[in-house]
Image (tube, rainbow, N blue to C red):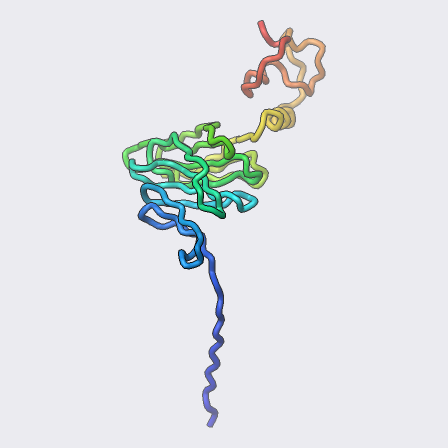
Length: 213
């Protein structure tokens, strides 16, 4: 008669989790390890590192009490800046692949806010607003950082263009706009691959001398 042999493998490991929880607190690791806590004034719904791991951005589902994203030093837990502008709970926050921008998503019951917003990660300046018809539940950058996808309770996912700098926008516009001969007198004598005056206005670029009336 064969006897059953039970072998138990014990695996010991140490985990250092980054997770969000209620009561306005984000724990990076166990407090016993002496790592910092990142504290909002209300419930925290999202947390993400920047690409080099030196910063963390969090989002607060404040239900009208907080409504902010905050940027923290990942080592010390010091609050570096507060991203203020949303009118309701911030549902998610994430960095761009190059770490220069942050995108947040907001909205909730009662039709409040319902936008995604882009921020300068260094200064906290608000750069763009992307509206939906209902709560925006999440927003993320594409791998190249030139697009943002948002998902909403309005049953839509939407893709938006986002540029880290004016030269990047110009390069994209030149790539996407087909060559043509402009009928604008201000464009006389320029090569077809150049942006026309009308196209510069379309992409909100500063008008050249030749484009001004």
